[in-house]
Structures are given as C-alpha cells and as structure tokens.
Image 1 (cartoon, rainbow, N blue to C red):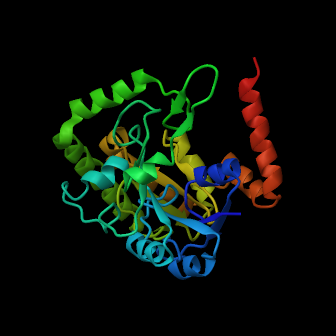
Image 2: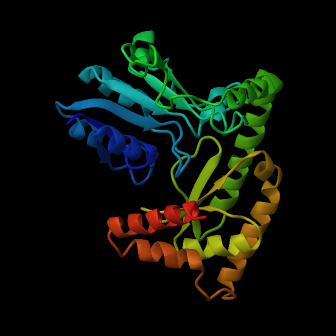
Length: 318
C-alpha cells in the first residue's frame, strides 16, 4: 500500500483522502516546543512505499508553519512529492512579506515542493467552494484529470474529483480578487497579522496562560498551566467569543479575521477579566466543553467517531 507522511497537525482532510483512496497516512509527532513537524520522525517514517510528504503553512490547530525547507530536502532525497497545505495560510502567507512580516520560505521557491493548496474563501474573502490546488509542473497536474473516451454518452473528461463545480462561485471568487486587488490584500494582511501579534502578546502577559509555538499569521493557540482551558473558553463564550477547542494537547485558539481584528482590544479586555475572575475564585463550575473533551479523552476514537456520525446523520433528517 502506498503511503504518505505528515505531522499529526496536518488537516484531517488528509485522513479523509487516505481513507477514500486506499492509502496509508503515517502521522508523525510534532516538536512539543515549536509545534512543528518533527523532522527526525519524518525521516524515520519514510519507507519504500512512501510517495508523498506533507506540511502546513500554517497549520490549523496552532497557526504554526512546518519547516518546509527541511521537508523539501527529504522529498528531493527520496524523489517523492511534497504537498504544502496553505489552506489556512492562504492569502495571509502570500502577502505577509509585502505587509512587512518576514516568513520562512514555504512555496515553489523551495526545492522539492510539488503542490500547494489554498482556500480562497478564507483570507481571499471569496465564496466558499472555490478552493484551488497548484502544481509545480503541468505533468503533475494531469494526474488530477479523468477521461473516458468510449462511454456511449460521448467523450467524458473531468478536471477534478468533483464532476462539475459551480461557475457562480468561481465567478464570485474572481470578482472578489479583482475588487480587493494586491493593495487590498496587503492592507488586510497587515491588519489581521498585527492583531494576532497583539493578542498573542496579551496572552503571554497573563502568568497562567501560555502560547503554543510561534504563530506567524492569523491563529494563536494557547493553554493554561493552572486552570482548565475549556472552562476558560466557556467563560469567553458567555462574553460572545467562541474559541475553537483543540485536543492532543488541550487548548483553544483565537482566529484573527477582519471583524475579530477590529475587536481585538475588546477580546483582550474580556480575556483579562475572565482570568482575574478565575484568580479570585469567582468561577468554580465546570463548563460543557470540558465535559465533552474529557469524555473524548477516556473512550476509544471509534466511539467518538460513531457519535460524530450520529450527529451528521441527524443533519439529514427531515
């Protein structure tokens, strides 16, 4: 069975793809300090069946960029592909340098990178459903195509897994790109990344909180060395801030977007108030999020998946 190697922080869509295509996805650990893919673990995981390495720029849980240069060297050494997941980083990593923020190399300028994915609906501000994948060569791109030349219904050819994609969404994406322009994206990158840095510094200034890794663009993940982070999250929810819950390790993350960047001072003030309430002993009741993730940590993943499937089933009920 062909296999790919990626850090545990790679998007769950890679697990989904491996399941669909009958491939084995080997997850490697991350460095507990940097939260980047452990390059030595990647080296050890590569075998004769490995056809692909993957890294994030940046990853969804912690907003951290994997060492794409090191992954590129391994890909070239073993003559295999390297996919860079820029779906979350998208237009933030594309325009960060022009906005004044230095980033490590992550794109086709890095030898060994063979494909890059990007979500235009995130920081491209386009309608959802217009995501793209870029290939280093036309030859690689052709493997994505499918053609059936003998079908009685006529010659059939399709450029992607989806047999057809809504033209309205693609047109909406193009219109958004034209409206924003390069100057617009640079402006928003400066605004959004600047807000993330401000929030990060505020979190680091609170003794009972700590930030995971070195977030570079829009996401900052954090945990507490004193309190249950999910209880902190639930208290922030009462103030209108719905933070994304993380696991393995526990945490939550704040995502800087245009609206949340505009309100970053209010977020900081609310977080500081919540932490003062914890320190003063005003908050003693556990929230619902802690219960959910506490349960998930004590039962097999298959059981958690079955609960998730039941939830999806419920969405289809009339």
